[in-house]
Length: 371
Ligand SMILES: Cc1cc2nc3c(=O)[nH]c(=O)nc-3n(C[C@H](O)[C@H](O)[C@H](O)COP(=O)(O)OP(=O)(O)OC[C@H]3O[C@@H](n4cnc5c(N)ncnc54)[C@H](O)[C@@H]3O)c2cc1C
Image 1 (spheres, helix red, strand yellow):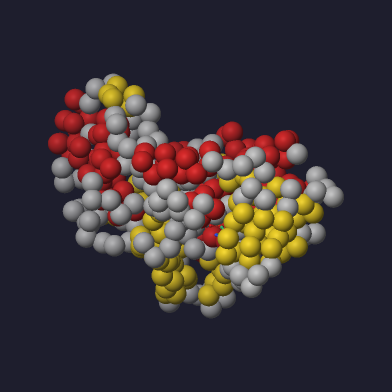
Image 2 (cartoon, protein in one colour):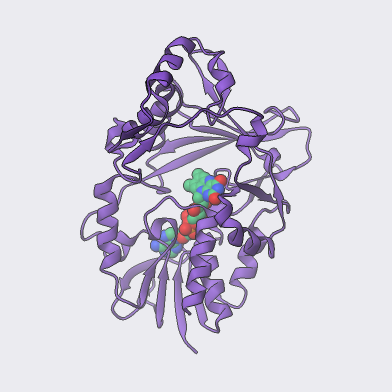
């Protein structure tokens, strides 16, 4: 029987382990944390289910196969979800994406309309700032995107973010019509079970050897081996790594940059904190540290006279978001290209791209076809 080693038991590690087991491989999963599921695991605080960050299933129509796959194991409920953006200059909450009706309520409506009217149909962009200026003009960019992005990615200047944009930017028409129409255009869903996706992790890892709280001291990539703390060596015919690719090479070309989040949980003595169908709020102002506030009850439908919200504050204390800076993306690619054939680097950290749950499932389904 062929043996596979999987590093990490987040959504990616579970998905790939499941595909390997289905195809008859013997699978050992090595996880440094005491529990499986990584960032998508549901925890409970005072009985309120929550995850670190909202982690709902969201994707374009092309994600339907991923949604169908997941729904076999985790029944899902579709969401009519609205996002609001708090703008301190007006002390008002506006829709996000930007809605034409909201412009009328803004203190600088005349300037915004002038900029929108003068915006060329098409421009060229080399970075995040130019991209959004080309899409919506300066005032909307400054209200919704500028400080949000600088906070979220811990940048001094959004022109540093120079990867992941089409060079040709098309002017973006503002949303019009019903709020639900534009907020629910994609597949947008959440598990119905109180413990979220946790059932999927158990099913996916069924039949695998799972080593939690296990630290890897060294990667011997040519021998497809993991040297564990304590001296044990695990070997396989294939290694699937979901950790950062620089770790596999002991950072020989430098450490890859990531941004993390601190997540603060707060229970409030009120049944619903946010308005109906508003699941989270964005905070795009320079005057606040948080990027987002989530009311979990909206996703989980948990019943309680109280409600749990989380506050996400960008931080360099953990590694969650790969940066969209070309020099970093190129560095990551250099590591990935240097991997021997028997080692695959997959998932969000593994490919150094901001991928969502739907992308990870699609990556796993493609991998199954190769086995
Ligand atoms: C705050 C936040 C909110 C998000 N919200 C959404 C959302 O709403 N919808 C959506 O679709 N996507 C969302 N995402 C993205 C999505 O959750 C991720 O793409 C997905 O969780 C990635 O899964 P993963 O297994 O690759 O990584 P992780 O979930 O980070 O899991 C990695 C696992 O590997 C383990 N590990 C790491 N290094 C090692 C090592 N050296 N040795 C052993 N184990 C190791 C970790 O302990 C962890 O268990 C969000 C991401 C973040 C950060």
